[in-house]
Length: 142
Image 1 (spheres, rainbow, N blue to C red):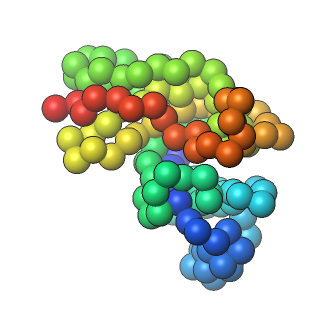
Image 2 (tube, rainbow, N blue to C red):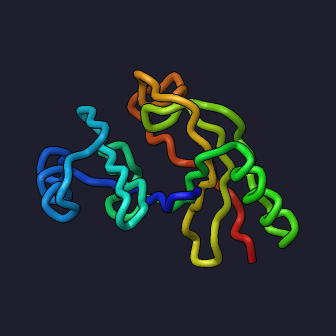
């Protein structure tokens, strides 16, 4: 089963966690000094916030696949629709090891399709641990 993903850039993690705890009626499943994540079942959303985003507000959207086969199916859908995706392979991002693909919609919003294999102890795999892990620049699909 797949889950919608929303990543929002925030200025203050503590204030934002208090707000989203009240909005969702539950605590995050993962918190770090610069990051928090809620895995909601109703609605089925992976909602994350971080201070690392290059912008405040919606940073990117995505579809989280529970199984590698679901990620493959998403990639095939994009390919069959002639939408070029940037497959970045496995990497560490947002305190998790995942395999990802990125596209940009006609409005310029970055979308990731990914499958997470395990938690990680660092935000990203790049040498610059202060950077955002958001996807690389990809061309708009249309």
